[in-house]
Image (cartoon, rainbow, N blue to C red; front, side, top):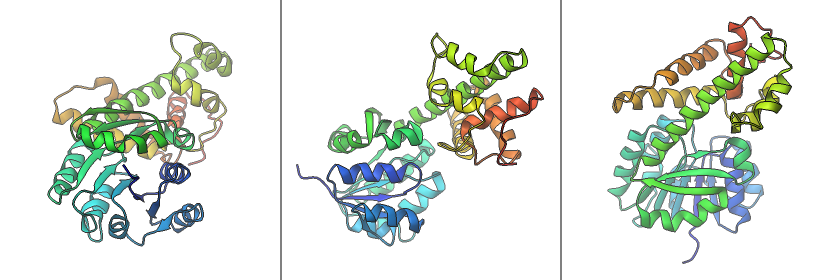
Length: 301
């Protein structure tokens, strides 16, 4: 089957490298974003520019979006000059943003009415995963649509798993964000406890990374956390947004999340301290505050 021309909407920290991987793999790409610099960069790499989401959809048959939040997806997909105004029957729309499962279903139903197949396909792996084409992609939708899009996913990620019907990808991403948030909080508490007891935090990272406590947060963020390097790969404000989605979803399904509720409040505290632009590992600074430890950096303050 011939490669579909791809419309890519959303060229942020994640979307820009993802789109370039597609170009490098030989896909024709038409891109749109409100950030002119981002568009110019990807166009210089070989993409075609679209002036609107509608135009991106008109010029392609596989449309991918990578956007910050549920309202952004609703506006880009269903709003004025949105994707739905430019799609044709037989097109495929894949939203790779992290949004509420209910919104993924709502958008999918609207697209289905126009003969467009949809997948919700949020990702895990952060900016490093996007840059290295090593994202984990969790997908909701129909098997036949997943099978057709799988070669595209394989260009951007190291794994892509069909988790269930439309919305299932977002549900699994919510589970992922629960575990990541709780792990960041746990790593932060471990580092603060050790530091208060006089142990070199770098030694803590070294030792814990080799035992049962080893995890992606320690591997990818541990040393940076100790050094106070919170240059954002995934910002606190975005993880806080995800946690808001998670808390709503937990209420929808009556699934108690007692530990996540506490971590949600810690992220809320970080937001109230104007640290939303820090990397989500910057939650460490909140635990340091509680322990009366002088953080090495609190750039957002």
